[in-house]
Length: 117
Image (tube, rainbow, N blue to C red; front, side):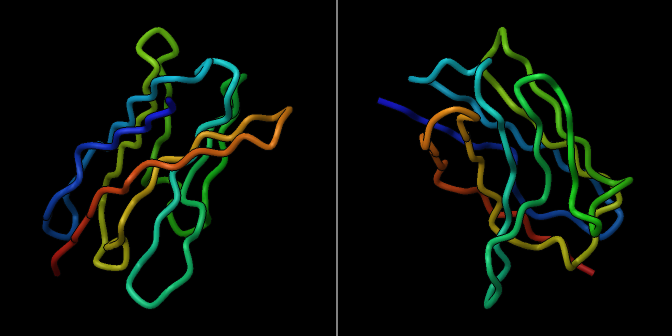
């Protein structure tokens, strides 16, 4: 059974920082691309940051220079360090695991991030 369990969300003031974690089980973690998506109220889910199984990273323009995605294959965990947070970063953040070779695609339950102005 595949599980992606996010943690680290919460309420923070604008300019503050949060670190999200996503612990994976039931998959061969090192073979998967890992992504953080977010969905704000009334908006579509969007990719915030991704990291390939080889360690390559990509970011939405809106978070470049403020967010950093990283992974620890020994701990089966992916992180999202979020700095200089803005109210527009308020959203539910979802962890996603995507296989580059199959259609396997898994989602966590989401963690709420709220940035107050």
